[in-house]
Structures are given as C-alpha cells and as structure tokens.
Amino acid sequence: MELAVYNIEGSKTDKTVTLNDEVFRITPNDHVIYLDVKQYMANKRQGTHSTKGRSEIKGSTRKLRRQKGTGAARIGNIKSPLLRGGGIVFGPKPRDYSFKINKKVKRLARKSALSYKSKDDNLMVIEGFTMEAPATKKYLQILKNFDLENKKTLLVLPDTDHTIQLSARNLPKARVMVASDLNTYSILHAEKLLIVEDSIAEIENILLK
Image 1 (tube, one colour):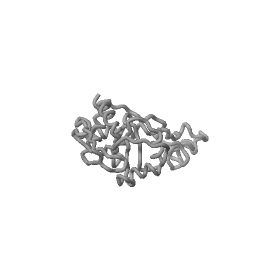
Image 2 (tube, rainbow, N blue to C red; image 1 turned 30 degrees about the horizontal axis):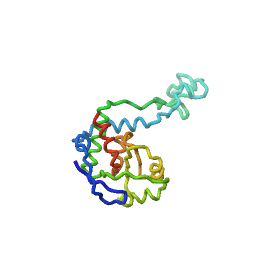
Image 3 (tube, one colour; image 1 turned 45 degrees about the horizontal axis):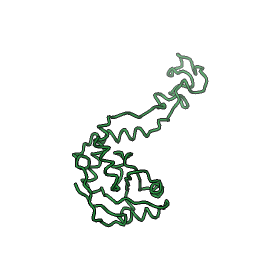
Image 4 (tube, one colour; image 1 turned 90 degrees about the horizontal axis):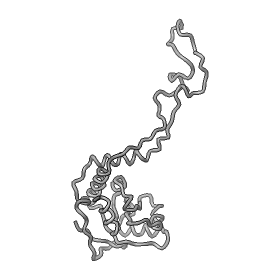
C-alpha cells in the first residue's frame, strides 16, 4: 500500500511511502480491539473509592428498642444499614482494576485499529519537522494547513520531541505521541492520524515481532 507524503504546509511532496499490508491492511478484529481498549481504560482507573461498613461507623452499639412486644420490626444499633447514617452494605472498597492480556492480542488490536484508519482514509504521512521553541500558534497553523484544527488529531513521532509536545499540549483536540507508546485507544480516539515518515518503520518493527 502506497501513500503520498505531505509537508507541514499541507502540500503533497514527490515522495511516497510503502506501508506494510500486514500492519495497515489486515482484516480488523473487533473483539481484540474491545479487549485492548477495555484494558487501557481499566488500567487508568485509580480505584480509590471507599465507603464505610457498619463496623467502621462511629456510633453507639446500644440496641435501639427491645426485640419483641413493640409491634415494630426488630432492629439493632444505630449503625444499622437500614438507618440513615448507618453503614453501607456491599459498598465499594479500594481495589486494583487492572488486568493483563497477551502481547499478541495487543499487537493484533493495534494493527486492526491502524487498518480501520487506513481503510477510512483517516491516516496521513507527513515529513519530519522540528520547532525551534514551543509555540502553540505554530502547531495550530500546521493543523490549519490540513483543515484539521477542529478535529481530534494524533501526531505520531519517531522519537520524543518536547518542543512539539509542548506546542500541542494546550490544544484540547490535538495529541502527540511517540511511536513506541502508540496504543489502540489513542488510535481510535483520533479522527485523523498524522504519522511522521520516520515513525512508520518503528511502528512496523514493533507490530511485526
């Protein structure tokens, strides 16, 4: 599969790149995408929620009324879950929501996500570029050159570039990521995937292991 390479002015160059069909043109597997996104979301959960049971509530342990003869239901102390301010029954406690899935499943999920993007023409290859200093306005201009200023975009870099990352940080719909950190959720969350030319080899090397 061949794609044209664009410059940051939004124009086609004379160069083209060949994408490996085993990464960018497979038959997508929706189930592995679901598993990988589910794991990503679960691993992000803090799991710090907590409620108090009746044994943790501060209060008297005196029985509120006698067991029989009142005509009302039997009841224990003021910490009973049946009463306002009492303990919570089966409430949430701090826990770890993370779980593991196989590396092959994660690779297949990323391949499937990339294949969806290429199939829908939402994948674009651009020339490598640098910025002298962080400048949100300059990065926004690059997006405007592609008419993407109002769309969710993900720029994939071959290596860490703090200048570009800082330039995009204040734009709510723009994300920048290194190829080695690429994940299924980020690929699918973006409406348009901008891959720097040198990142393609890195992505293919990771996903074809």
